[in-house]
Image (cartoon, rainbow, N blue to C red; front, side, top):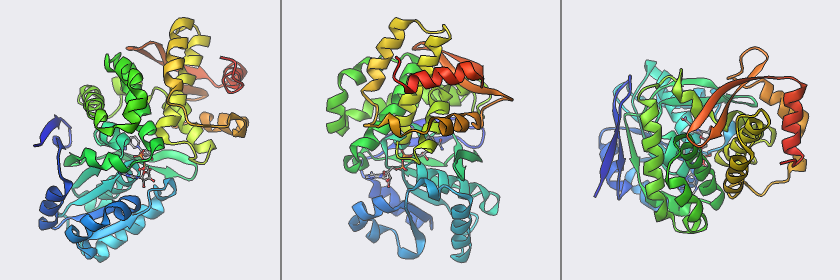
Length: 354
Ligand SMILES: NC(=O)c1ccc[n+]([C@@H]2O[C@H](COP(=O)([O-])OP(=O)(O)OC[C@H]3O[C@@H](n4cnc5c(N)ncnc54)[C@H](O)[C@@H]3O)[C@@H](O)[C@H]2O)c1
């Protein structure tokens, strides 16, 4: 049995299909002469199934490292696609998490001025969040997601079976993004997620309702603000602080877990600037902390962290653009001057003065 969610886009509407067996859908795409870009970890884990379906000359296996989200890698891919005579009317098919998605979508958007791409998200983060929304982002040196555009897939196929082989850290990373949507929307499922947190990590079937709810929340906003000019900005909650944390740790912290800490930091700044009351801060801090990584804060080079924050692409002039919170359901866009007061606030957070 399969069912689907329609996402409206200014480029083309597309369906997110919940499917029971990815191999059937892959066979159809092979018949349509598609070219497959597959995460190396997925290839290793599911090779027995995949190698019989996807012919060698129509596949490219790529390591899902942040270092591969680069202009050099996309250029290399495009050269391979051209050499293998991929045509404008053929599709690229990404099988992997957010990294493979970003590399494939960006390459698809520029080769021959754009060809269609289809996505089989295999991580929780990609299934519950990144598979919709049209954004493609690649890194420029240590500057995360600095280059990109908007280019939605023509279809998404979610098979929950992939989640079975995902590491606990990657499940927690996906849960971080789900929590961020739940706080944005004040979703009643947030309390349920926290209550069931330990069970969910072990029993991945329990994730299905959270994937659906997370996509519903995201869909309701991106359909009205696909290009991130208004309300969608609020989804940046936790991301400004999180991105700098990923960069300063050389991506030792997973994206969604960095976002979890980033939300706690945004809440701390909200508390210190009088937006959030201490009771709400404390309540959210306890909930978010469940999803923090095992992490040695002493390893962080604070000055480098602060300079990365100062370079965030959403900054305006000498202000850091961030999303603060009053409570779940009430987020506020705010520009904070990059001054000593702000620096001391961030330092206080890192020193554990909560
Ligand atoms: N374009 C967007 O809208 C968007 C949104 C959010 C995040 N992102 C980007 O997504 C990236 C993070 O994506 P991610 O969290 O999916 O991580 P990822 O793609 O880096 O995958 C995480 C790890 O899991 C492995 N993996 C993937 N699927 C697996 C499976 N089913 N079983 C076992 N291992 C598996 C990968 O090889 C990798 O080692 C970041 O680069 C982030 O910037 C993009």
